[in-house]
Image 1: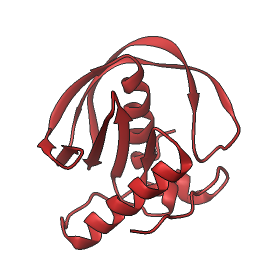
Image 2: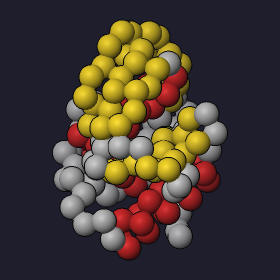
Image 3: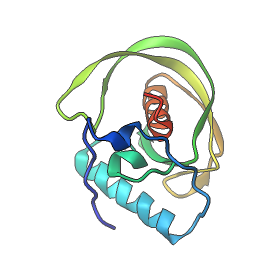
Image 4: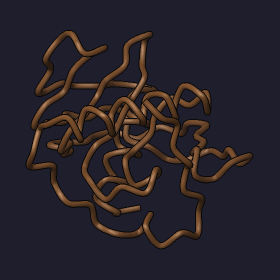
Length: 143
């Protein structure tokens, strides 16, 4: 495992569309391990692959003491709005109030909770929704 450099706002890679993951192999496992180490070091709650310079649809989200490793995430349905205090590891030192979705249903090619439980589809509400949508948008460069 290696800690990777977090790409900062202004880098064009953050605006590019990521490619879906097609090979579920050792390289993907290494990327996820590196992202986890990077996220832990940065003391963040979520990290998408483009934030470490990799244009693949992979993200890590931490919520309720669980770590979700998402590959090829998509938002199936989002509803409601709320205001939440949000930060981003690619925009260090800045936090702000953002209008975010209150709940969503997401789907992935694969998802695990702390590498133990498979979870291909889930409905999230409240704070977790903020991170899930934000990181999924990073994977598709829709922000």
